[in-house]
Length: 510
Ligand code: HEM
Image 1 (cartoon, rainbow, N blue to C red):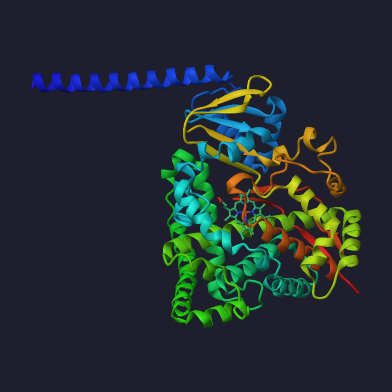
Image 2 (tube, rainbow, N blue to C red; image 1 turned 180 degrees about the horizontal axis):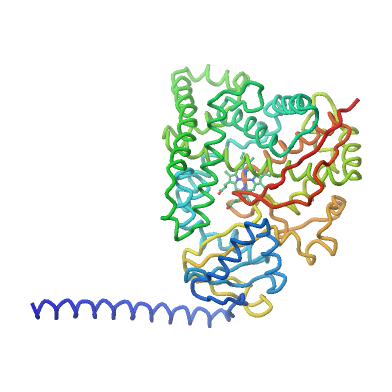
């Protein structure tokens, strides 16, 4: 007995010694790495609790509850510069709005950073192994899979959107022109994107939308909120036990599975056709373009197809609907911009509206850019270091020295803060002034669609869909009256939207 105890104590001591030696080796290696690159530590945010960071976590939660999380970030950057660190749950986070640092993380040193296991774990019940949460080979395979589907010809084809904008205009008239436009944009974007992706619209805009459509819509919202909560809980994710969340994920998956089965059936029927007939059908453009059918040409794995399509649907809905909502939120408050934009639209408008006409609407582009600057739909984002690495900036009191980043440390970057820095956009950064885009040619300091290998593949699709919708609405309505005297209140879910929506009255064009 005594001998066994002695052996156990010896084994424990040896194990402890092993870990201490390993730790010393890592410390030594890191010390040399910092010395070799002349690294300096980044500024530290003053914290009362430097280990668990409970003060920071509480501040964040309170600010989020009061719709002021993004303003809190701005204040922290105003007081601490472009880059500073915080410690929460024994983990260091590098907070930055420095375009050079962001460019290094997303592009030059892409291989050193990833989404990290926490993001994967929190989102996997809804998003599975989709493109948003995966890294390395799995991610590059997914990216390669969707790339061919974003070809120019499909995105400039307005038949995808036209019918849904018609429905939006009719719905506004049915409601006596007094509406919350944000709510309607969410429905319209889901309708049009589901048609493009599944081949069949969810149909939320129609007067008699089906029970299944509403169930799917609610399940998607609930599953998304649960995913965000899990992301926020971070290491405490295990406390998230919500049966309705799991059921909502199942409902979303079951809805998508129906279309995956159809796509696989379509693939089998295509495979059975003689090559010559296949080419004739494709070349003649007789088939309606369905994103899922294109994906199914490259894989017959139903789970992979479902994960991809659910990821795409979420990526596309909130961001595009949010952009449209912020455009009209601003237009309702700026009659001068409304008038100028309407004049631009009417000058180039044609029936049916073409891609070329849309491209000629220069002021429309400025309005969209200015909205993306002030209200980037993905307002904050992050990456986790997958190895010890050195960034060329971020260290030292002025943030200009090289900065050491240890494996598993997180870089959080905020486009919302960066887009509102006077040194990048001028002293009138707070002002909604589309004209500034006449001469502005920003680089990494304007980043609504991300950059580097993980740049948003839907950028062109989103800009075309949004511009088309804006042009159609400005053609159909001659004025907009703001029915909400309050300023904007942030609602941060997976993307940035308006807590108070866009309450307005539209005036039909004569
Ligand atoms: C205004 C609208 C949009 C904005 C501002 C936007 C912005 C972004 C941003 C910032 C990312 C990077 C996320 C990250 O790396 O963490 C992203 C990724 C992505 N977006 Fe978009 N997006 C928009 C619309 C769309 C649309 C319409 C689609 C599809 C039709 C789409 C598909 C995707 C996909 C698949 C990814 C993941 C790319 C990857 O990880 O390789 N997005 N988007």
